[in-house]
Image 1 (cartoon, rainbow, N blue to C red):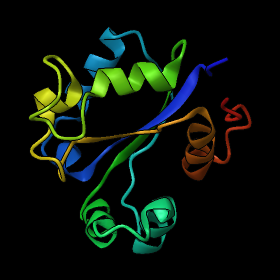
Image 2: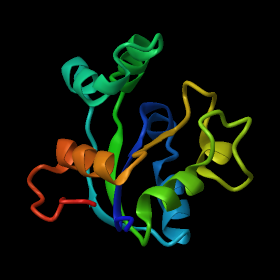
Image 3: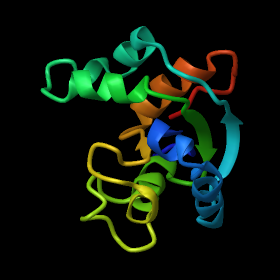
Length: 142
């Protein structure tokens, strides 16, 4: 059974451009409830660890550099079938391919500067939520 929690990160491009409030409003309109939120600037070590799964991919270095370029906003969201619902709400990685009304269609600049991260599975949502919100005992997502 799919979990009710997931993690998202409003990335430095969207956060720095003042789009965080609009993105949060859109997610709330789609039925998500915010259960935890923080603003931070990730260190190279934090970003490298968080995106470790992509270490062998050619975009890894650029991704780490991008995610450390400014403040970001991790959030734990609640909704039935949260992972799938969030991935539908944010749209395709490339905003040119994203459906109308999705976060990336509305607020992303490009495939690389795509405004938002979303967990891709219940297991990753749990791991990623604990990365940012370890102090929250209820973050046993999935």
